[in-house]
Image (cartoon, rainbow, N blue to C red; front, side, top):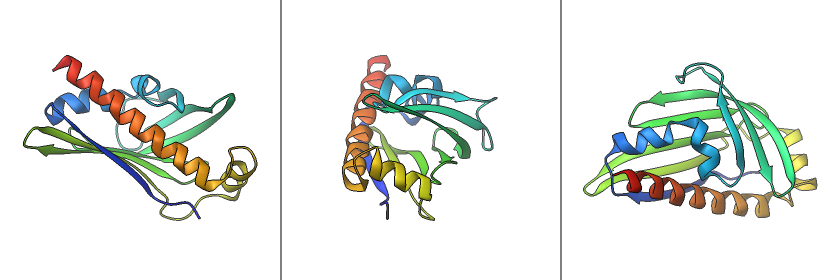
Length: 151
């Protein structure tokens, strides 16, 4: 059964500046090693559908998602339709700026198709989750660099 995953980083900038970067979904391929494209189908708000193209090495796959939480300067989350996971970014103000938290939650388990693809094509659940956590940390590091370069 898949685990909930989390990574966090402290950024020396106020939440508004972090939000400006994190909520620009077109920029996600700049930061995430797994994301090739992230395209919102309409204005970004709760309920908006998103089309994603993902990769792992030479393996590519599309997913669709729906934004389930959108609170400017605080948090947004989207639920991936193909595997029922919920990915979120939460911003917490700190004394020195913002703590940005990325999570992958699996509140109701995942789908048979997703489990089978992970086991047969992506190396199994534990290696796949290890790669996701590494990717989350890389994503947060790159977001931090992008935000702090503008501050």
